Structure formats: structure tokens, C-alpha cells
Length: 213
Ligand code: DX5
Ligand code: ZN
Image 1 (cartoon, rainbow, N blue to C red):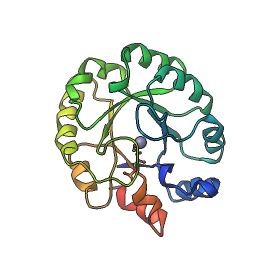
Image 2 (cartoon, protein in one colour):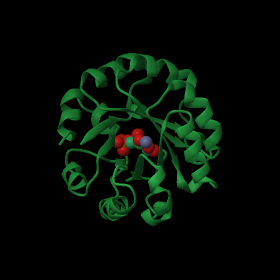
Image 3 (cartoon, helix red, strand yellow):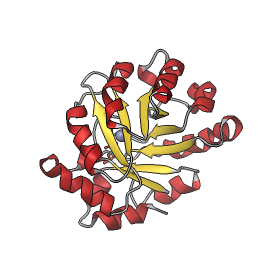
Image 4 (cartoon, rainbow, N blue to C red):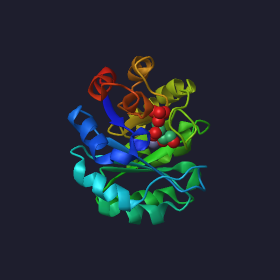
């Protein structure tokens, strides 16, 4: 299991230190939550903050857009050279076009599904995707309770992935900890995002390793 700590739960007053600590702690990716105050009832950070983060981080960036105007934000964050940019299927009228745009910028495209959205919604996009991100909380805030139906959804998605594009990865985001990590692993999940579990721990490295099952 690969682990992407979410910096949403980091102390932004000492962000450099917080990024270095998870990289030295062995994280596989750094998860960056971008919120516009419209698609979700919260706002976070833009490239003014994420550009310096990308310079400090030794792990690739995984940018999770929770916004209405996806194409605008893709252009805005392209200069941060992330490994992945994921956008919500619920906020995009032309997902296939946006996938091509992201790939054209040399970034791996991923789609996010909210807790209510069935995996079938993206069946015909799977062959063009590098990753699908399943939300296991409602997007907008860290520290929420894990929604268990994501386990069944991951199993269904895995069947579709095996049929359409076995190279596509499954990532789960929200409420992940050492209690639910094994059921996620058994359901075929490849990457987990963990915010409060990692940044709430005394020892970040130990917390990260406890998820790398
Ligand atoms: C929620 C974000 C998550 C969040 C996860 O909108 O997408 O990445 O930071 O935080 P935890 O792990 O605390 O649920
Ligand atoms: Zn996220």
C-alpha cells in the first residue's frame, strides 16, 4: 500500500518542516487538497503555496481538486509539476476532454468519486485514466469519520478496472487509519490518503509505516 499524507492537517505555520518530516518519514506521495469555496464549503491553497511545497518535497505531488472550474485550476497548478491531478466527476461536464488536457501537460489524470457516486459513472473513462480516487468522507474537511461503503465500492471498481484498464490505480481518501487499512488492502486499494491520522500522530514516520501494509 502506498501512502499519501494530506497536508490539509499539517501546521501551516511551519509548512516546510511539516513537508520534510513526512518525506523523511517515508511517504510515497504528498497529497494536496485544493478547495475553491464553491464546490465544497471550504477554501485552501493556490500555487503561491503549492509551488514552494513542490520544491521542498522529495515525494511527488498528488493534487486533489475540489473545485467547480476544473480546467482553470489545472492550468494554475501545472507549474507545480505534480505527478497526479484528480478532479471530481460531479463537477465536470466534459471529463473526457479534461483528461486529455491533463495528460497533454505531462501529468497523470485521475477522477474522484464522492461517496454517493457509483463506479459505473466512469466505466467508459477508465481506459484513459491512471487512477480513480474514492472519497470515504464528504470532501471539504479533514478529520471526518470513514464511510464504510467505500470498501464495497472499491471491489466493484476493481472488477471494472480489470475489464477496462488493469493499470489504473485505486486511491481512497478520508478517515483512513490503522484500523481500516487492512480491509482497504483486501479490497484492492493501491494508495491511501491520510491527513489527521499522520499529522495527529506523535511520530509521523511510525504512522506512515503502519499504513504501508
Ligand atoms: C477531504 C480531503 C482529504 C482530507 C483527509 O476533503 O480530500 O484529503 O485531508 O483527511 P483525513 O485523513 O483526516 O480524513
Ligand atoms: Zn483529498
